[in-house]
Length: 147
Image (cartoon, rainbow, N blue to C red; front, side, top):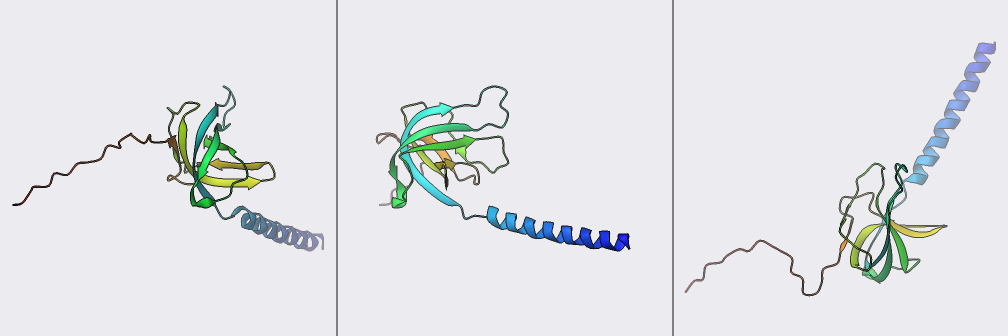
């Protein structure tokens, strides 16, 4: 008798746990919103030694946003690296405070404000903006002139 009662209780708990797990998975699969903007790199926050897994974050003052997307603040924290599973985008380690940067990443807005992360796609990036007179190297193809 007790075995049957125990089995019924175990089955009930398992089914309740499975239903709860499905709810959690559905909540975690939120739509990713991407943002592309230019701004001025203000400050780099690197985790202190011994803080394994802590994020590396650039604070950026936004100067222009592509596609007229509204963001919650002119100052955005951009997580460029963290010891969490990828994929991760790329970031230019040579960027210095005061330099103009281009950012493309996942936009996150919650009760604490908004931020951007490079986690989620290899296409995301944080890099120094090209100067107006700067030339990007490309392959040159010579074309023979015909008379």
